[in-house]
Figure: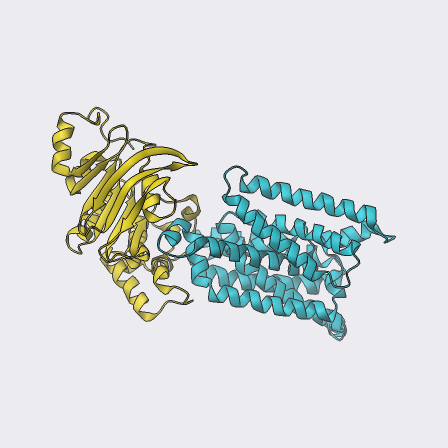
Length: 281
Length: 237
């Protein structure tokens, strides 16, 4: 036990570990907030689709040799989120089909572009890193840390300020609209916020695993709690806890950060299922 | 002046009208039942009245001091709501959303309003319960309480008793009737059930191949001549 603690306190002296922990907690917190809404609105896959788009964006940024690729990826992802929502209302092209198209399309084009234009000698490694985020959280620059902090604050304040409206729109869109809430506007807001979350979360778990961060804590919390507020709070707490545990375990056991966090999330989900079963009796 | 006037309405989807040239008006305190076969456009009409869908032709006017955000609505239940983790109070309060405007949180007046609405609907003792664990009748009362938070004037109900057992159905009809009679709230209700529609309503709007709008007494007179071909079909759901 003491060797583990020693090892941990040694790691804690490195600024990159501290950075990883701060950003990890923030990302986990933000991503879980909207997870409840996405799961309930049957939008679980939007996170997934957008993360693939973000991968495509990252490929473009890499080719153009941007030193800071976050703004470009953010713009592309937000635009796609808005477009997805627009086409979702169009009856000719159904939302889920558009989503599938966009998501695999972006993935394919991203990889293709990287393959054709990349100057890197280790292309497979690069792609793997972007997809599974194996090391990127440990190599964050100061700017990226600050950007994550600012974006997280923005996301959390939007969520708190619009909490009641998000609830109303999630529970019953047509009622909200009929009684004077601008449902479309808030749907748009949700989509944009999700896009922002996906982009910042990509650093933590990589683009393939982003939606796990969004939906797992929400699903676990929904097993146990019965009011929207309790579910949201539990989901956020659980997500932060799992992210912390995941990062620490991955540092100690030298496992990939993203997949370890998701593995912890999965364990938490099964524990929540058991709690639900037991409490029903 | 009438609370709600529909003038020469044509409605439907994608510019294909399913209802043509419909005109009627509703005064404060009326109890209007909209009846008609499946697919005759009852729900579409309600969505058009609520402004969720634009009419192809004609217009919906509101008057008598009624404002757009003062219309209470009880929609049909959606799939999303079936396993929604929310407490009763959270849902009822969300009916006050239209009053909030840009203000992010509910004030004490709105919380009082929600409390009163729940008392009136007889669900004051289950405010902390989870919506998905309630019976069908209780769920409808919750949604009705929410609609009451949005309005004191007019309620639009889209088949409020769908899927309820006979006892819950009778209770809900009674509740709605009391809201109309005691609180003077205008009721516009879509119903498959012509018999009960006639029992409670003051006016009937029948849409379909033939269109009828008027007081229920005239409707009964016409119906006995079987103008609408409803009697042999009875009430289907």
